Image (cartoon, rainbow, N blue to C red; front, side):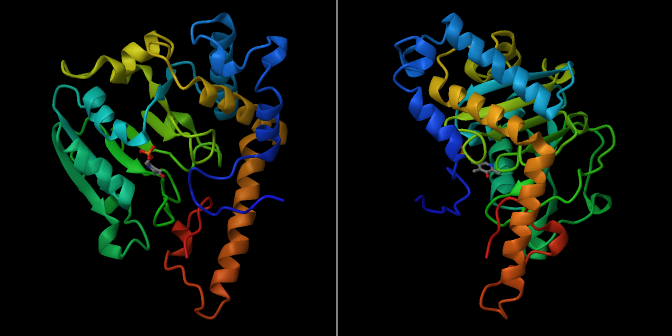
Length: 300
Ligand SMILES: *Cc1c(COP(=O)(O)O)cnc(C)c1O
């Protein structure tokens, strides 16, 4: 028997994936070594990284002009990494503040440039997100940042915000690989893997090639997305176990039927919970407008 953990992350993982990791932990594919004992520059581990990329590209349908990097880091390190890589010449960006995570991203980014808040869900008690037509958008923004799924408030964008030609930068921690998305809608997608994909320690970044050359002179080498992409995510020693585990999860997801199948499961599962909450006569409450309710973490 296993316990149900409703926490958003680190979260429950597919049992089949954990069993496979357990089975091959001491002897990976007849090598008489654990995958954790391989050099990150061995052909075996490099093959795992290549497979991770191939599988992610296939599942998410990532177009060739997008680069993908795996960064060993807390997700929130990129609250600084993003402005340090994308602010470019004019040093200006807009942030949609819709909950704890995007507010934290906004505050951190303010240390690196002229960062403006375009909307605040706080004004609506985090029950909904204002339409883009009401956002304060400066056409000179190098990018607009938002958080697709605000994990703590259980508040999720119902559609991709329409912001014209300004590149969208999105935090998809807690939502990446749980629904279908169209990569071309974004300039940069980033996500910590501990909510849906693997044990903690990694951040995935998918970035449109043309945005890769705007880093600041002070941007740390280990946080320089262009350089890390050139090094195929193997500049420093990554969290090799988590990379390996991610590959197992990706294969499991493909077998399950990919994003379409998992999105259906997530919508049905979350609806079950929302129904119980809404029919509990106030015993449980969820104050998020149904249009903006998260399909992946239900708060009550
Ligand atoms: C969990 C979470 C984070 C923070 O992740 P860390 O790896 O702890 O920094 C950031 N953004 C979102 C949307 C999250 O859900």
